[in-house]
Image (tube, rainbow, N blue to C red):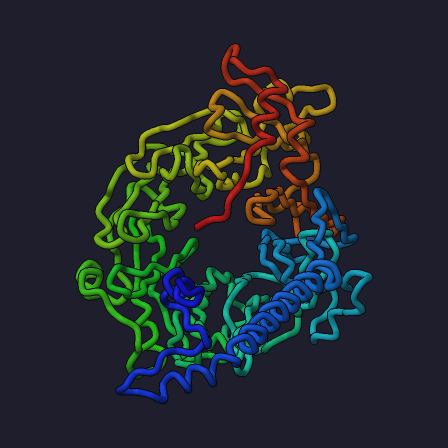
Length: 554
């Protein structure tokens, strides 16, 4: 057999002259394929070059980002800091906000002095006030350094922070201060600059500035508006203001009652806004829409709720329902379908449905003088902390918010001037609670502390996973004007913020603001056992508290 024939048998598809066979119907097709075949290797080489060039560029970018461009430095947050102001007085006001945008909460407070701190060359006369005057100050939560401060009122009275403001095309945030005898100022929360200053319009002889409430935008200028309630003579007057300029909207109104301590802005499930306030043995309310229409004489964009209008008995400012005893505190609590209302009276604590105001439960107690605080005793189950009694008869009660049942109670004698209790949500969907008082009454009878007012304020920490233990974190001998437990960084560290100063406005002294990281206080704390025995040693208890992690509110 010829070698060519043998090769053809072995490779029947191979064409000896490397050309595709021509077909009778398309004789030029093979020629076209033959012409394009030399371009194939060239295209493959181009693809290879592009691939490796892209790979080189990606590796170069990763190298630049990883090794040449420095990563932004995360600010180091000090566990403890303190700043002092001499010859000053302060007010019961503390607020937190990330002012310098370092993702760490900063602290806002008020103090009254002739001049500001040494870091800022500011005086009262710079803002038109006589000396001494009230300054609003912002302090870094990370280091305690003063971020800004500014004279804002002659004598501070009401403050509301984090109020949205329109600054041209951007949104900002402000602290609104209503001061005595007659000042109304908005201060930029991030820079400390005065955004606007207006005469408030109320009488200089107004005896009491009751409440400063934030309303929806009723004048359509893009910013929430404000409602001021002030006691004038024997009735409470209402003043509406534009939140973006501070100018008064319409004229003065009246609530037709003689006192509104503890007023609350409530939104019904129909989206209607009502002001709730205490009346003798009853809960009273009035429509914000009605106040706006009476002040301006025109239509209001706000809504009315027909059910609430019927409960008001067709009167503009009427009782919504009777309460057992004199109403002391009124606060919002989370409900099943919106916010419910918790009333604290001289005889009982009552939870009302937020829409029809029907009682959900009643807890009979006679001596609750402080505003309740919220937390979680069981995972994701809201609870409320009630302080029943005063002095040596004080008792801490944790009630299930859904049923009013007692979850935990403990006798904890209190001292005059003890701050309000506080709570912080923990990562296990419970809460850590902070109480002030004295667990052992013998501490009042020491040789150097013969009077209750001379005893030290003791701070206790409680967590529901250890119901038989309190952790005594600190003892403070100074007068505490205000106290807050704050999560300065999400999931990182919680701290206690103390505002300390003279007990009265007429005796200037040292005003101090201090931060104490909770985790740093635990190792030196004292374990207080509420029951005999217990499976854990004192050190094991401290370790469990040290391992607590905190979470931000939803």
